[in-house]
Structures are given as structure tokens and as C-alpha cells.
Amino acid sequence: MDIETSTEIWAKFVYEDKMDTRVRPIIADYWQRCKSAGVNPAGGLGRRVGDAVFASIRAANRGLIETALPIMQSVFEIVARSHFLLVLTDSVGYILESIGDETIMTKTRDMRFVPGALWSNLSVGTNAISVALDADTAIQIVGPEHYCRPHHGWTCSAAPIHGADGEIIGCLNMSGDVSGAHDHTLGLVLAAAYGIEAQLSLQRNVRLMQAALDGSADSIVLLDMRFRPIWVNAAAERLLDSTAQQLMEKDFRKIMPDVNLSEQQWVGGKKVYVNDTRILVPGRTIHCSVVIFPSEGYGGRTLTLTLKEQKHMIDSVNKFSGNRATYSFVDIYSRDPAMKKTLAMAQNYARYDGNILIHGESGTGKELMAQAIHNAGSRAGGPFVAISCASIPRDLLESDLFGYEAGAFMGAITEGNPGRFELANHGTLFLDEIAELPLEFQSKLLRAVETHKICRLGGGQEISLDIRIIVSTNRRLEQSVASGSFRQDLYYRLNVLKLEIPPLRSRPGDIAFCAEQFLRRLNQLNPEMKKAMSPEFLTGLVRYDWPGNVRELQNGLERAFYSSSEKLLTENSLKFVVGTEEPMAAPSAPGGEAGEILAALTVCGGNVDAAAKRLETSRATLYRRIKKYGINPKSLK
Image 1 (tube, one colour):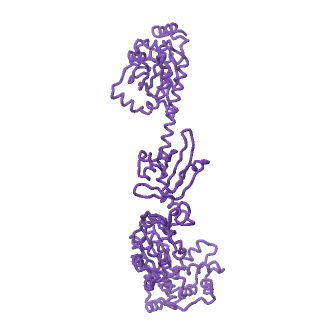
Image 2 (spheres, helix red, strand yellow):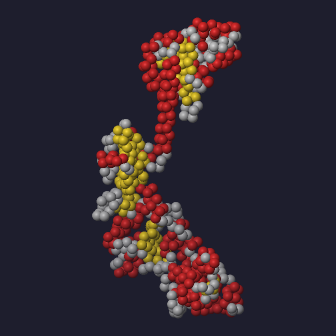
């Protein structure tokens, strides 16, 4: 349709209210809207908002402007000689930016088609920008298709710009003299709008990826071919105590001297894992595990380093190796006054960080006591690392306890390894059988105990630790000190808080009580084999000397439970407990009748009436015997 015909069609609608069927439906719709709203067909001049308002509009659309301008400039270079104008608007229709030559810019100023002006259907009449934004479609409007006469000398092609969620965030428009109208113009504008959308989507994805990487607990560093960072996440900045800008010129071969960052890392594109290496930062050394991933793209080769501080790896090691305390004070059974006093003292010690020395015969529950102390203290959430000093070979003691650096000795793994002291950081280190430590190693342990600092074998950097140390022994360390097999200074350093666990034979009231607890647990685990203990069986337990203490009692009772086919454990069942037909050792005090009374009172929870019935004697007789042997039934309740 030529311009003259279009003008006649426009005039008939505007002045005679007659709509020609040749008018495109979308144009006809927007003409009707303008007429209904009273838009002046002779108007069409833009109205610019104030500078302060326009500044806030630009600020709200800063991302769109920064992304669109380079693309608009590229398009303008293509059409520069055609005297076309490129315009960017926001989602409402406010012009944000315009690019054109001086000829076209003069014409736009006359129409007030300038940044800050609102180019909507109701403000300047039907135009490509308003229709594109309102109908969400790319459109070209030529000459008299514009509702207002001052626009009839123009051709305008506009396409909406969509954000990541599909919503309209702006519009790209190209305007020029109506004589230059061409279908290709709309295609060029549409392609440019798609390019802006793609760039915005890419930027959004990059921001999301960076947010995800910055939210990672792992430190991530991207190295170029010179082994210098080109990007680091927030965790890496914190770990390396430097900003990304400060790190850009750092050669990571110097920061990670133990890792061979060389061309061979690129070969095959395979990941390289380093379990333990040093990261050198100003003033300190950090031990980390590292994953190195090479990649090659259009921009050249890169190495991605993922650094995890070794304390996180240590947490994982402790979790999977069972370095946790599972017992608490409720798991220690006792009704004996002396043992209760020891338990009360241990609960009090749990509140402090002083070193604890636990003495007791084998089987009395020294590690159980140590775990209970750990779980009752402020370090309950930390690791509990238990070591039997007698089980570690002499030549491996230092590396096992203090760890070693890479290449410290023949046979050491390439990356080095933390020791038990480091594994126990923020928790408790339990050294069992401390008296078995070789004398030549005791001086090294003394320094670690005094300072809570260790130095790995082959390393020169001291590592400060936050640990509590508990040791135990079944020997009298005073005698070991006197004989010269244990250092006196180490003994005094360890013997800050001392606990003495009495042997089971000296607390016969606990024998029957513990037996009842162990049997109850066995019955719960095996309800189809439920058993009970006869008075004779209990008396036999009390009379026995128990050289293996509570551990022997627990194991013996379990053996009797599974070995006896009867529902009642009788005197005959004692052979399963101690492994002989005549199990009774020489009675220990208080054995005999006193032991029987203690056993009955323990089982009955200190109830004299119930104990008398169990012993088949009168209440008065039992009271006389209780007085005779100095037994306190209240202590057994």
C-alpha cells in the first residue's frame, strides 16, 4: 500500500470515524484505543520527565542499558549511512538510550523523541514501541499507520526484550525516514533484541554460578597458563587471606610448593587428587586437600583448583573412623559409695580442661570413664581419639601421634598425613596405657602436653591445637617414676586431675547390680531366651575375685546366658562365667555372708524387707547382720 493511500485511509478514520478493512487488525485496534482516549491526532510530541525521576529510571534499568548498548552500537555501525536511529526503552516505554547521526538526532529533538520521554500509545499515539510493549510482539509501523500526523514521515521497527523469566523488560526500536522503510529492518531489530536477551541470560547464569560457587564451603581458584588466578570464589579469598585482585599476580607454584603444577597436568584432562599439601600464605601454613582439574577451551588452557582445608577432611576422617565418644555417665553402673564418689569427681572434672590421669586395673572401665567425661564437657560435639600406647611400634610413634609432611621418610605417602593429635583438635585425646611409652619419646610428648602444639615429622611449622588430654594406666606411675622408666616432669604434667577407679572385688555391691544390668540388656536383645539369676548364682558372683573386673563380669555373664539352656542361671551356671567347674576363688572382703547380703540388697535396691525374703530370713535377723558387717542399705537405693 503506497503512502498516499495510507494517508487517505488514516484521514477517513480520524475525521469520519470510518475504518478501512485494509488496515491491519493490530493497527486498527490501537487506533481505536487512541480515539477512545481522546489522543490528539495532530499531537505526538513526547513529554520528558524530570532529571531526578529519569535518573531513578535509568538506575532501575542499569543492567539492561549496560548489556544493550554494545549490541546497539554494533547494529548502528551497520546502518550508520542510512540515517536510522536506534532507541532503547524500559518496559513502560520511557526512552533510556538513543544512538544516531546528527541529521536524525535533530529530527528527534524536534519531536522530543529523546531519552526521558514516554513513548506510549496514550502519550504520543500508536507507534511501534508502544505496540511492541503492549502486545508483546515485534512490529513495523510505516508512515500514516502512526496515529499522530507528526509521525507520518517515519518508519519504526520495534521488538520487545524479555528477561530471564519471560517478562518484558524493555524494547529495541529502529526509526528512520519513511522512504527508507524495508522489511529487513524489522528482522535486524528482532535479531538484535534476541542478542540482548541471550546476553542477559548468559549474565544471569554467570551470576547464579558465581553465587553458587561463592556459597561453596570449598575454596575454588581458576588458574591461567601462567599459573596465576583469573577468578577465585569468596571461600578462597578467606582461606588465602587476600582479595581476588591481590591474588591475580600470585604464582600458585610458589603458594603450593609441594604440588607439581606443570604442563603434565594438562594431559588427558584428568582430575588430580592431592590429599594433603601445604598452602603458604603470609605468616602461616595451611594444610589442605586439593583437586586439580585441567580444561581447554577457546580462551586457552586453565586449571581449576578446589581447596578444602584439612580440618574439614579431619572431620570426615573422624566421622568414618569412629573417633566419637559413645558412652556417658548413665552407662556406668554403680551403687557402691566409693565408686559413686569417683563418678561425682569425674563429673566435676568434665567441666574443666585440665589433664586427667585415670588409674585402674584392667577391665575397670577407664576408657568408658574417659568417654563419659568427654561427653559431659564442652567438647562433647568434637572428636574423641583413643590410642593404645602399647600397640604402636616404637619407630612409628612420632609419625602416628604428630603426623608427617610429604617425603618425611621412606614409605611416607606423597602428600603427608595428619597425626592423632590433629585428629583430636577441638576434642579429646585419650592415651591409654600411658606407662608403656618409650622413655625416649616421653620428652617429645611432654612438650605437646605442655604447649598443645605439635610439629609434624619433617615439618618446620608448629601447629596449635585445641585439645583436652586424658591418659590412663593400670600401673602405679609413681613407681615407674621411681624406677626411672617414666619421666617425673611428664607425670606431674599429666597428673593434674586424678581419678582412681576401684576394682570390682572391693565393691561387691556393684557385682550383683552390674550383673542385673547386663542381664537386662541381654534379655532385651534376646526375648526368646529370657533368663533370671538365682540367689546362689548371685552369691557365687559376689564371692568370685574378678581379676578382669567389670569387663570379665560382662563377658562371663554373656557366656553363661548363651551357654545355659535353662531359664534360670543357677550355681551350676557359674562354670560358664569363670570357665571352671570350681569357680570360687578365695573369698575377698566383704565375701561370705556379707557378700550374700550385699548382693541381695543390691538386687532389691536397698529394700531390707525384699532382701530378707530373697535370703529367706527374718527382717530382724537381717538388720542384725547388716549392723554386724557395717552395711548401709540407703547407699544401695
